Image (spheres, helix red, strand yellow):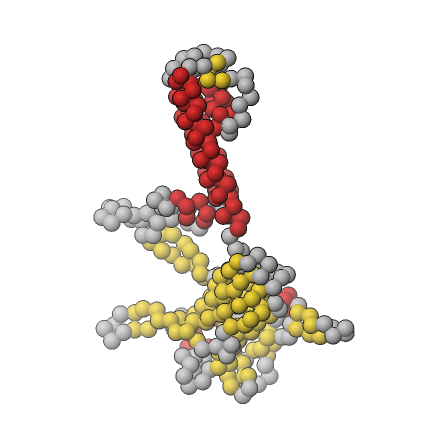
Length: 303
């Protein structure tokens, strides 16, 4: 992601662009806050793990430096510490913040006891926050829905049909899966303004109680479909895109997850069909090879 500086209204400098992704498609936003310090919780759970631990380490160092300087503000506040030794005060601060207390260094004055008491309170709070944030980050659902590289348009039951195949790429059971497909295209109003208009495509089956193997979303291209009468050139000329959203619940972990995928016009193949991924083994068991989810072949039908 491209770092972003939030531009406040009326600010003279131009705000930096910020790149986000909707599925595989990059989008550029200008004027949106990337690092919003007024929302530290969202910042803490959305940054990468290396950035998260680097920030926590930096905060730990800064807090201990601050308390070390407070100890040094009154000479003799730490028993057995060398006079004016920042290192002794700093490491005593680390031990106090962590509530370890080795016993070699200890508060020796009322000021030392006051600062160490405050530091212990800060340490307990910091530990609780760190524990909670790490738990939240570990418990965030990470969907592993695999989408076919291309959507296809082929004949199904005698009608042209848009198909999008997906699979759950982990072991386990997914229940209550729900999918939506949106057709997004550029349109122009009567006033000459251009904007993107989304249409939800009606699916033959938008919900499935169990999502274990593969699932092919199908939209019949009849006279009511926004895709009716469109050729491949129309998809490219009008910058048409398909957006697919999937929401389901992972049974083993009892948590919901959400996934999104976009297809550009060039990724929608006409006259092609998906190759089979599901077969029946000799013992009668149903077997799905999700490695074949991307494979397509000519449907052998006249366009």
